Length: 204
Figure 1: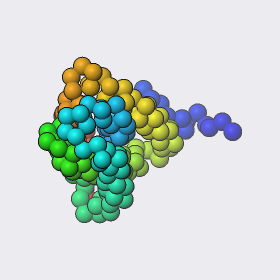
Figure 2 (figure 1 turned 90 degrees about the vertical axis):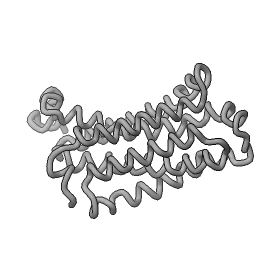
Figure 3 (figure 1 turned 120 degrees about the horizontal axis):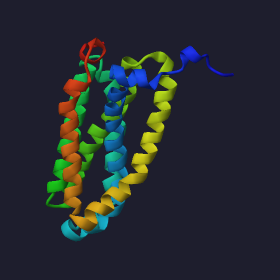
């Protein structure tokens, strides 16, 4: 059955109001998480050649997922104590700190510690992205926004290995994590401007 015309989202109006731009910003958290998750596949050879620890390679993805699951589950609860914007800033800073630690890691153990921090930050960013859709956007466009989020996740996950390969080939694996650290820090700063209004700044 076709939806009534008045129930369909007007994307031009959403862009003019700033809602669509805000949604694009929120989607950045999913891009950071999903692309970093799969990037490891193409930077691993160069990384192991430099810092060794091949026996711990399997943990580089597993510990990231562990951090993501724990943070994703906890993020919703933390919203009872801190505002959405505050949670987003903290999650982005955790992600940035983890990526920076990975970039500077002298050995595999430090690298895994960074991956765990990245997982905490990335998992929280994903969870908060879904919460943001519910809190910041009209209910009648939720289905479209959640559908777009699924596409964003798939494209980012698919592009992660390509990003890693480009850095590994032209710069180094450390630069790849350095770029993600900078992106996480930029997202934390931008959250202050992009997430406004009582739904984002007041605790619920």
